[in-house]
Length: 123
Image 1 (cartoon, rainbow, N blue to C red):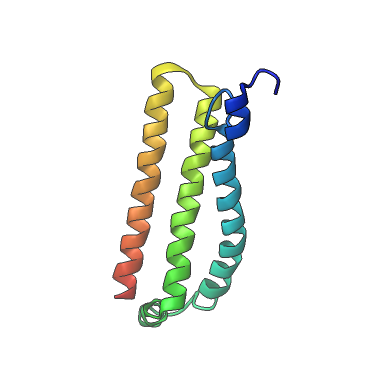
Image 2 (cartoon, rainbow, N blue to C red):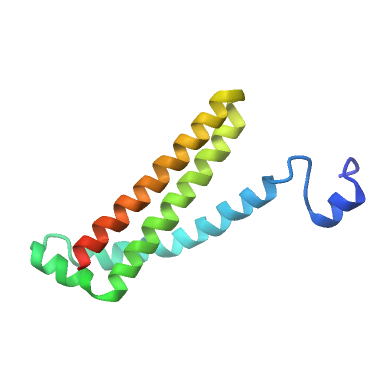
């Protein structure tokens, strides 16, 4: 850390200025997923094999719908951040920017699709 200026040392930012923040977001989303995925499996597992009407009635209740929505959002945001970190580590130049934008677009499209399907199912 001797290459850091006093200001950078006080702010906690290294030479890249964002690595710690990305790492922290990944850790927080990983802990959230460690809690939400078993909860999702527990709530969703009881309805597997049910008819369409039973599934619709089940997801019309707030708790299963909220758990499913949070799992979708946090899971795909975690995917986006992980893909971005991987792309930043292994690519350069224009490919880096194009792949990061593609990963973000894919992630947000999957979130929108999942939430749309959940809303259609719940309503």
